[in-house]
Image (cartoon, rainbow over all chains, first blue to last red; front, side, top):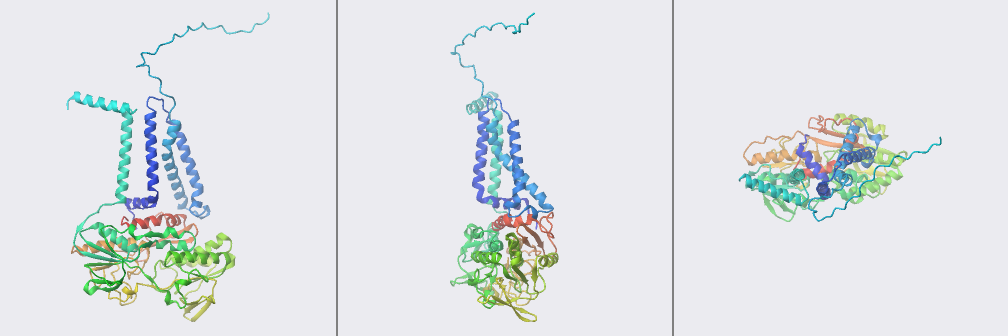
Length: 149
Length: 456
């Protein structure tokens, strides 16, 4: 029996129906965190590479965890798997890994994505008094050990 | 708008964004994210509350008898596809339960709560739900009579009553016995399946002689007696008690399953698991006090002792329909709703259609058959309402995720010709796999609910 894409989506929706409020809440939190990061990072030096690596690492961890535990979670065992089951297990684990990585990215971005605080802006601080810096002392010659002749 | 106005607007936007601590680029990023979110929400919303796919205007009065899987699916589809029709659903039951899960409850895989639901959640608001039961069909006068004496007239009738489980046909059997004295039966209500698990659990721990029966004639989910047998055996292996039990499977004839490849598999698999097959053994009577069961064999009655027996009573259309003019008068479908096997239209009353287990068709009294039959029956009824000839055809599709072990199943799907019709060609219908087990355990309930809402 053929299933249309909309039919499959309807089944997926029914599968998650009881959790939709939680998923919605989590997505809102993710969007809020992304918005917060963008606001916070204005004028800062940001770093996307480290959060990306950490997120990928987290995704890989979930992938491996899923590979190991999915058969048991589904009341089955690795011994029951054959042929197409391995592909399905890998596919499902990749899916879980990607999903959790996407969901975790905004959190990780906020934790690791800002490299430095914004520099103080000197414009508009006309009343600030500059303290004269003392002149730098000339460089001292390097100490050399006296060697007895 | 002048270029100076443009500049003023841009400056104002920039000032506002700066006030919020955002650059214009950030704003664009957020806007596109917001658009994606809104699109996703709109898509989800349309799946949750789908608008009419197409509305056929009519003032026809349509009566649907039965609010099971087929009745609710028909109600949802008719309500969505007809504009102005008076759709009446007749069923007294408030509770709805997921019948394909009864075997899982009966073997301790699921908790009962997972099966329970309410019809109210699925009946569309535009459908008039009459909380009553039909006790008389009068198709010559286009009306039905209910238990409370209401006479309800119709222009079109959809019969979706499901089946009746006839305990009394087996001498000594009653539903009160289920769960006691080693008697199990997963074929009726969730609480009976739960009590069956108590009996199965005791047998799995203690061992003894286990008899697993199957009735003659048409029945819903013909794979269920096999699933109960194989899951019980699998439970024993899991607990290390298999050597304490002697297991027997007793079909009423000389076959185990209608699909030939599956039949071959089972003929090999059951003996390999030390499950003895006794052909031609329809259950005739049980004596729960002495724990004996009598079978009507070609060689005469045979009485066997048991410690656990899975009784599957004979099934029929509900009496009100079975003895009505709508029932087939001739074999092989005598007593079932007489419909054309392809169009599902009644062969003598063209304004009557059937959906689900009550139909007198060659194969399939399963939820999967309901999924395939309902769109055909509804489509053809709408064509008749429009004065056209019914063109949609049901090919006999049915499906059985045949659980062979805890964690493994074969996804068997076939049609009237008994040819395999796999929905997912990459899943072999000839081998045990983990994927069909996951589908049965995790996904089919969601598919069932999507079906009740008329989305698949």
